[in-house]
Image (cartoon, rainbow, N blue to C red; front, side, top):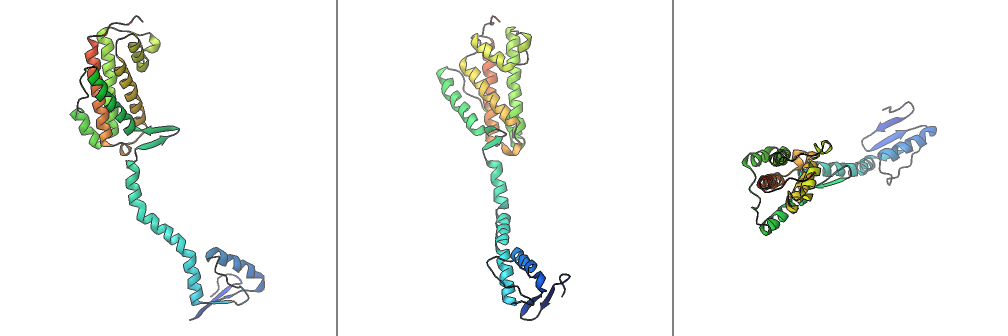
Length: 241
């Protein structure tokens, strides 16, 4: 069999013979180094031979590691794919995102501080958001936050509070000024700030990266904040801004 212009391959029942002219010995040696295990040495001489067992051993040795790696990848493909969506911590650019940790912090703070301040604890997540969280947890979180933004706007409207034009679209600044003037307490403001950060983090993620329990926790905490703002609307005084 001819395998090149000047290289022949003779296959017999017991051996494989490479027939090469002297000038091509180095080239064949390089080919053997590329396709066979470098630890299996074979003298390449004009008309050199290797028997079938040597040929199979060299071929097996050269393919063993690639085959093992391929087998491991195929075996672990599904388990790894199932684990990745469950990871609770993500990096978005230089931003480290851990929704579970942030939401747990809000839950614990509300559970302890609400009792101290004699205000109602967080209610269960509204049914519509709990249902949505099963199919689209990210959308559930973002919509729950929109309820908070609406509650802040209603708070300002009920109290007749107006801010300078440069603050019209800066709700977080408005909330800080309301706290500074005593219209809202520290717990309400701190909860708003923490949940706004969770909302911003969730906006960078996909549904498969958000757990159902996280979406429900967000909806519950947002519902508490909405109720708290509605309760404070009848108590707060107008800031001198």
